[in-house]
Image 1 (cartoon, rainbow, N blue to C red):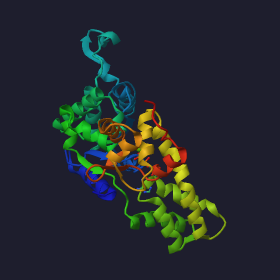
Image 2: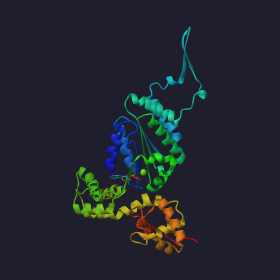
Image 3: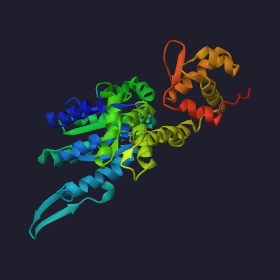
Length: 357
Ligand SMILES: Nc1ncnc2c1ncn2[C@@H]1O[C@H](COP(=O)(O)OP(=O)(O)O)[C@@H](O)[C@H]1O
Ligand SMILES: [Mg+2]
């Protein structure tokens, strides 16, 4: 399913009532494929309908941030009876009405479930709801995610207007889906952000240029499109580099596009590849370096041979790199880089030094 179709389904889901398909959505995609951008777009959809939104990242402490920060803040802003609920009893005595306020230590501590229940009760009056987005779920604490999803499911069962959208890296997320307690995610609407078609890349590059009163001819556009390789991060980067090459000229020229195509890989290396490679062991790097010798997909056995290790070791390193989402299996026995220009980056940075053995 494409991005626009997903946004439409989500929007329909907000209309359709509690538990509607689309209200629970799972977005997967490699780094830089536009997961966060899409999360934000869905959040905007919800806001446009008057829903409240909470945007979070699945780092440790997610539940505490929801319970101690986001939800109390939203309740304070939107619950008109927030204060009254602290009064547990009204006694009509001879001198009038007295109220008893329970001291803090005896008040039940609000839980994720009770806070969400209260907030959605308040929102129900206005016929709106609550959307929670959680980015980077692959890096999340399983127990915390389970708790969140369990509470979500309770809320849906209670017919509350609530939605949840999560995003993460494909391999890690598919591994999470096999976790019994996360089965709920399997029933969510799913979209895997694959490469953007060249026609759409061309449109995405051309539009902002023309909107700003400049032009780009087909040849220059074609050069920029091939440099993007269908990768959303590069739409922005290549477009920006081409735009800046000769700001004062009306036309974004072939030279400008070529300049962008030449500069983009290095920028991407610094912004995407370097951080992704950080924390890899020397052998993992060596494996990648041995792959970068090839101009296309590498045969796993050849990579092991180049590294001078037994195929068994080779497949262990291979699996680790697949799990890290840096490479992906292609044809049987072959692997390829998961992101554009990673090969070029590795060649330039000579990370493939022989491993210490
Ligand atoms: N639909 C899109 N069209 C054009 N550019 C996009 C699109 N989605 C993402 N981008 C660009 O790609 C970059 C990376 O997107 P992001 O959502 O941060 O990726 P991810 O979260 O998957 O790593 C964004 O900063 C933006 O420049
Ligand atoms: Mg992101």
